[in-house]
Length: 273
Image 1 (cartoon, rainbow, N blue to C red):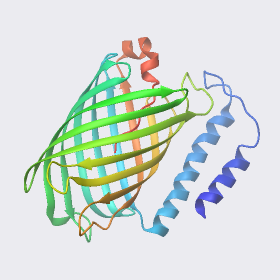
Image 2: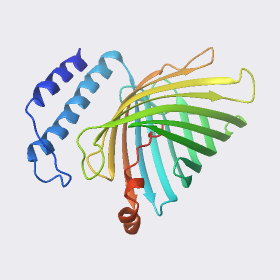
Image 3: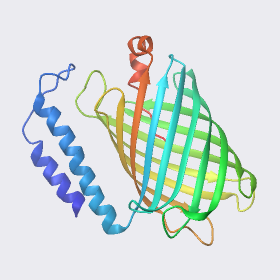
Image 4: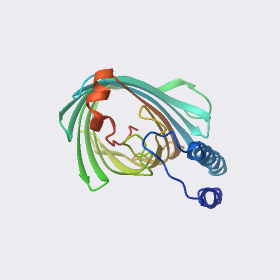
């Protein structure tokens, strides 16, 4: 109900025509409309999440591009089984990216992953205290404005109950749209599905699906809101299977890199989860 009301309101709000220049300076009404529409969407999602008792999945990611090929990143996540209640998980990680070719990128990352018991905020003792190292490769392909991305990740997991291996495959598509702003599209919709496997029976461990909407108010900031569904293959599945995902992604650039690699800066990529 809240989503249908939001889209009706948004349609009426944008009924008046407007134009946008690449300098983003000639139409103040556009600058006001976009933030207001995003705020309206967030309020609508909040009401829906509370009604359906969805969990929250929060991401803060900072990426620094040093050159056309090299970049580093740091990320923190906080998750709850109910909407900003019953917090049971957090992680922080970082890594380095290297772009072999335009459509091939490899990453080496590592981080700490902490899972708590259900029934409250960070209930002890922990279900899992984990340190993880993960190499990955991302292959991307563009078909017109549609981008298809395949991500392969291997995880070396040092958990509370011993060492484990896990393998992940994610297939995703994304589509940017909206008026050009400084050479990039301000909006993007995306969908992805990821499979998790282990080298022990029953081998298949998890499936994770995400549908997301991104708003890019500037070349360095991206805001993401999405719906994430997760299925764990185990007899006693955790309570939280459905989450509202809210992400803030900050992209910083070495000054020379930002000026000389404009195409790389504005490329579309699926955000992590």
